[in-house]
Amino acid sequence: MLQPILQIVLSAIAIYLTTLIVPGVDLVEPWTIWHLLLIGLIFGVLNSVIKPIVVLLSLPLLVVTLGLFYFVINALILWLTSAIFDTFAVSGFWAALFGSIIITIINWALSIFFGVKNVDYHRVH
Image (cartoon, rainbow, N blue to C red; front, side, top):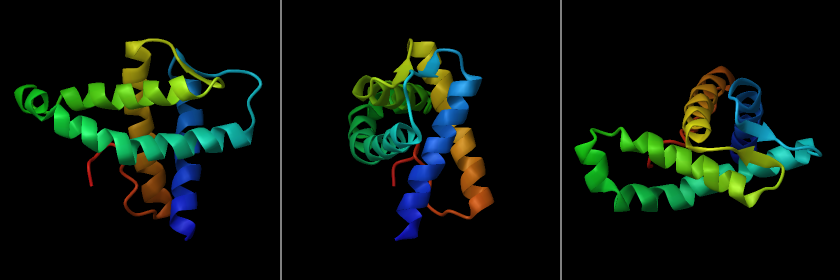
């Protein structure tokens, strides 16, 4: 029961830290902690629901590019998350690409630090 809540909080922290690191990935004022938690929730849901479908449909591209197209899919999921919320903005493809890489690294580090299992938003389960 506590695991999904912790995953949402870790995603929210990763998104917040990414807004501090990556230019073009921003939280738009006025935002609150609740906005950030909701963004983390929707980001996780999109990664769990939409991403596997997109990965399956783009399997030939993933094979041809030796998996590098996966970074583009991650960027599109981050951009889609920003399209849903007015308080979260991603300005362009490169910002989405670098932002998704940073979010992946931060989520990985936080999940190891807090001992959370199965927090890998950028892999099909």
